[in-house]
Image (tube, rainbow over all chains, first blue to last red; front, side):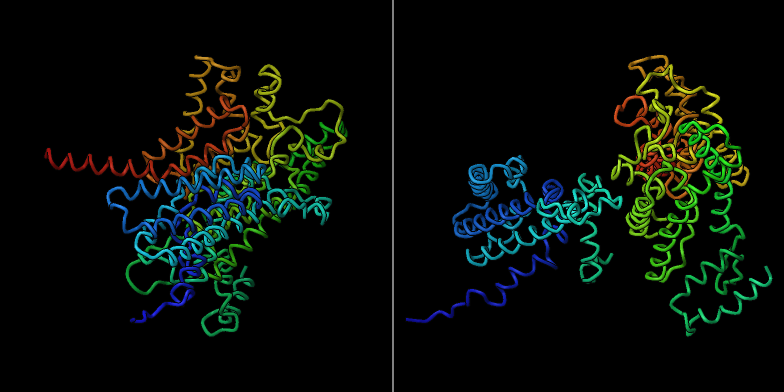
Length: 217
Length: 385
């Protein structure tokens, strides 16, 4: 029997699938996808973390499912098939959150359901899972979800810290006693515009460090 | 002056290429052209160098701001004496009291703002933007007097970095930086920007007369009804609570006169904005709707920040519409929006800031359509000819 050269599970190419979306191919800061949820669920860190994990589960599993089915999906109805898979996953995640983390689920409210319309997920299914094997698709899903997730968590860190003076619900500013010196929480950080501006600042820092991201006209 | 000029020339080589402080070239340049007219001669091509450069323009605006600033100082003292029941202060005492209260805010505004401008100019290798000379004076004038200084610093930093520098500095900003600073404070720390205690020095900390309300005329109209508003004369002269520089319509009109005579401010915007506000005010008086529609139309011109916004904010040459027709549209819409926000939005007694900021965003759109309409008209003329 002929022996097929097997690619190691975490080859350099596969590592790249995981690493690139964190930085130079980040879904939020470079591709500017999934912005709406980045604005909506980043007031506090806890919902942001839960959201990041939810998106990771949905994206990784849908990617694997679509990659496994990719040869049998007729080209004309592929979007519908993708949506069915995503919607199934989102409903599962939503039910899971309602059962085991009801408080957070209430805070995230409609935004868990709206993961279905998160452009990152459709984008990855269409661009990657439809053309690759399940294992790389799984890694691609994880990588993109992490890229999305860390931006979400970073934004929510600044918004919660500056907006309500706490980190993960722990009142840091109060414990430090800075309120006694006349410090006050910044009410604007809680409003959606500051999420946009915070994402903008992250993009600014990223482009200042990595000049290759700057478009030439 | 000669001595200063000699000194500046003496240290100039240090800042030129190869000099010891080469990196600080833009700082030197900024100071030198602020103090003296530039003696640079362009060698290639034909250039027209006008003596009236941006720094002189800005200086004119600063001079125009002086009446409002001086009256603001006096009014801080006056409101303080009224709130605390002091009745033996002379005019000079009130003025000094206000001046000393206002001075730290002006210093903070300039130090933080210019500091960021200098650093940004160094990083970019540009000349220092002189736009901040005016912005730095406008910011204290549109704040309530009791705002903590660190909040002023934060809002100035936000306005200069996010409102101006990331767009490319003076001349490239979409929003008026001074109003951006105020809007930032307004949404960040509403407790210090609204209410009836913040407008009078010392009232937030308490200790005022029992039952004394430091509400602005606009807030009075909302809370107690139009009948309780101060008299039109008081509002015109400016002996009413409000942001530092906005209360006195007289002082602002003197500033407007200076701007118009020197041609620095746009009369088109001022005129159309006033007419817009007056027009919609009269219309609302006639139609009715809610209680506030019955505020006499000319009240809108003399209370709140309308006069200050019209003369010093809406006419900002960078953020206003650039075409002449566009200026009429821009001004009129701003005036209309001010009154609409005042009358119909229960959350905001005052609408000048938000109206001007919104129209700042719309100004390029207005210009776009004005320019396109002109192109179409000219094409038609060619076809018919």
